[in-house]
Image 1 (cartoon, rainbow, N blue to C red):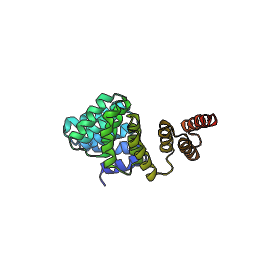
Image 2: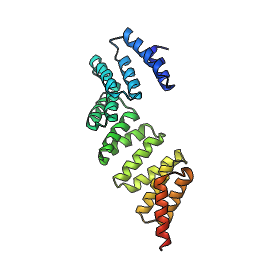
Image 3: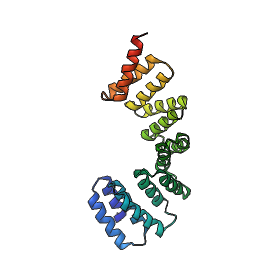
Length: 220
């Protein structure tokens, strides 16, 4: 196993100092290889050292302007610093250079969502779900964005699909409850809120929803 692959494995095991030592050694031996800089940048993102990470990704891009994963990494640093237009620019560049992975579409969609540009976020999140259909987090965030864009019927289908993957997803039940409330289906909403609370008793939003529905039903 070469030092890059070994370092990635160490990062997965959260052995960050050992990974840093290996990557430093690799970069010293291969100063013109962008891969070492990209992996070190990813390590620094993992360590929340976004400013230094940015420099490593930029160095990789100087060495190889077509290094799609360097642009993706740079996008992540801007995303974490809440500089969403810059994040979008770099995620899009990574896609244009051929990075066809769920994560880059997901992050591009989420960067639009953080700006409350829900309609712009939808196609990217949809593409992410197509590339990773079993990823419940991507699917859930897509459903949430559909709901925030008033695509209620589509959102409902997506939340139900989340529950097919993970029947213990309390937030999916909570959001189905909100959809039922929107449709003035109080009993269905109550059932969804109660299900969310049975999975996660400290779910504050579901508890509040349950309380409000029970109050409404008691007045009928």
